[in-house]
Image (tube, rainbow, N blue to C red):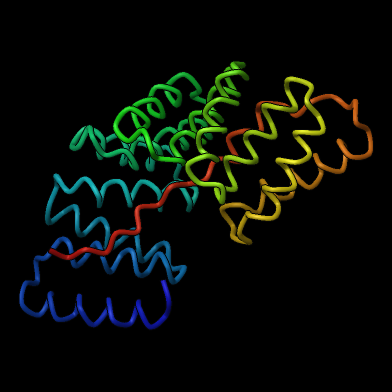
Length: 239
């Protein structure tokens, strides 16, 4: 969101809280604004306040899970996301985020199950397919990985994570020139943010290897998790 948009949102939450100091939605919105501004600790504090006011607030639990994971509290983030999907089993974004962070922790089977749940709930959700493809690649199912990454790209050609994961799977199956193409596309699309920086460095190194030595060993599936886009629920609805 733009600075102007965040200012308008802050003014709105200020008005809402002046009328209802216990508005969980207003606290959540303020937490999302702080997240956008880079204040992750402040975001955690306000999201926890929203949950305190409304313990069954699935969206607040899901947002808290993402922020906690991004400040290094991965286990606590996973717990929060598990709470979100327990409250709302049809919350596709929460299932996708949970799958992503389970994969980051190395819980591949659980990640596959959560990603499948996300795809089942919302079949046209590109990032869920990308995360499922990444998880399947880690599990060794490169055919499934390619299928779901292809689906993600068909639904959203600008999904950087899907191109990166597809590059991994193609590399694993010896299709090096195709892997190079997908890695290049990842580098073209990936934003210059902390969420992508580590994966981008790895892709650049891998691309150099493949371009310099076309028959080099394929990309290890262990890197697939870092190429799945964290799906952050940026909803700012108050009503």
